[in-house]
Image (cartoon, rainbow, N blue to C red; front, side, top):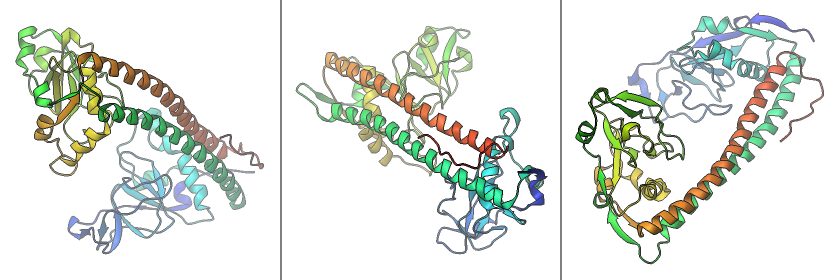
Length: 398
């Protein structure tokens, strides 16, 4: 089957988005749905609108392919209805004998190239650059055959991916359930106290100045440096003490850190300081630092703050503008926790960490499977547009 290399603009109309003035926006479903970028993108079809406009600048039709043209550049979705598109999107509409699904899969296969060479992501891409994209064209019958193969292959991959994702979720839910069981089914000898009674919250920075000289190295932790379900902070960065004693938060070995601004209660925003350079660390001033007193083990506190019940309560009491909400100081200071003796705390920590290790291994297995399935999709797409697919659809192993 003969393929020809053309320019995308020879076969498609490209409509660059343009945002109406803000005064025309509304959330009452008046006018056309308005999409500014890829925020509402799904796996294939764009999601329900959050905003509408009574003044339409640039319109995409149902069935048009929408491309994100501002960082990130390249992601695509189908429009499910007539919509108004803002500056973050472009609509791509076939104007010659071209199957829309074939075009969708082709653009999907070229997404990494569209986002830049050697991983360098463009900040934006314009109409002319989209029209100049290389496009491999084949007869309409062959397009339909390729689409049928890809539809079946992707359906099988998506099913396998859903199964792996469910098993990954099950492993995480098992860990959450075990945490809840430990902290809710308290036994004999458990007592209670508030966090402010049991911990020193946000220790003063002057301690670091008293311990070290200006040129001594200390650990520095950026705001995004805590990993999902990992206790240890990312301590790869060192700085001299004199460079971090301004507006940064000071912490020491065994302090527990919790981000206090959105998305503070999401995975990866809680950590335990271990292995600090010279025993001293600094991070964003948007961290809450807990230093346990003599009655509370830091690991026990870390896992207590990790449980869903604490997270849900904290989220309900957050205040501030959307996207910049903060944890309530009163909630943190006055929150009452129950705890057993230090010996029992260490016993529970050992059991939790044994399960955490097993769950982590299971998570890695299924995360690897998800990654492999994503790579399989890329491989099939590459074969589809280099003429390597056979006419027989042999399916995909689940």
